Image (cartoon, rainbow, N blue to C red; front, side, top):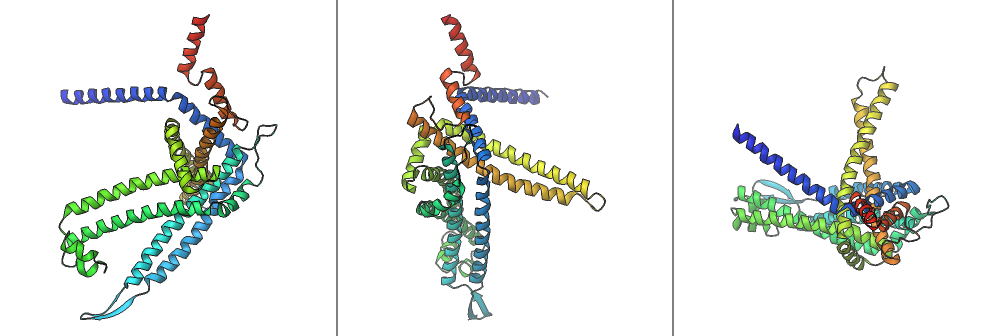
Length: 397
């Protein structure tokens, strides 16, 4: 009993320390959190003023589905190309080396085209959001960039296809290396368990003999491949993160991918605190929003099916599940647009701030960000700053 009580006491102390550390971090990042809230409000205004931007992921999604159908058909046709050979056990069918290389190339084309479509979607959304940001508001404070979605659907192909293709190529190469390392680890583990059959079943490029004769029983080799796979996966996440920021720079200033990547990298270094604050807020907001939309759609599907088809419906589970699925898909699409809009508005805000001077705001600054500028100038960005200002004024009086 005494050990149990001491364990609970230690756990409570650890939790109190973590809570105090969290409060200190929030207080230190108070200004950046306020900026993140202002950016999120501005992104909500963008989606409200330009609702047609929600059709961009839908169009790209349709193109992606059509491409997947084409890719599966070509892959099935390529895999059906077999070579017949006579052996002691009878006729054997296998893939030739040309077919294997074709499958590898076809798989790489899937990675490249998938990354290209994702990059195209990001450039279009970033371009529309940047156009909205730098559009002069009307008398009601609203911004309605006419034809921005259609223009950026065309401009991204005409002016930025090379940048998107190169950025997606870099990401596809990293992903291909990751898959090759995972395949080597799986094949090596299989060769360790079946050392006598490794040379027969593994591919004809020499890896089978290497795995079976040299490293079939070497667990360290499998560990090294796994570590390399984790390292490549981390590098892939870094490339994705930098590519998202670089695509925004491509849409914002029109530079090529390499120059945009460097500009995005230096921007992240100059605004590490702001991006870190948004990096913690946006995923949490996206998760909560996705859960809320999914549950809301499920509840609507349940009550509408029960209210309309109560006498003819055997069970409301099907409509409820269908409603949850529809809410999940639509919510994911809306929140993806929202997330890219937040990153774009932050970069537009930084550019606007650097052009007009910190703490001043520009002509194109949205209302939530302008309020943040005013609060920052007055020194009331957070309660602790407000209290500090009040005590300073009392001392002056």
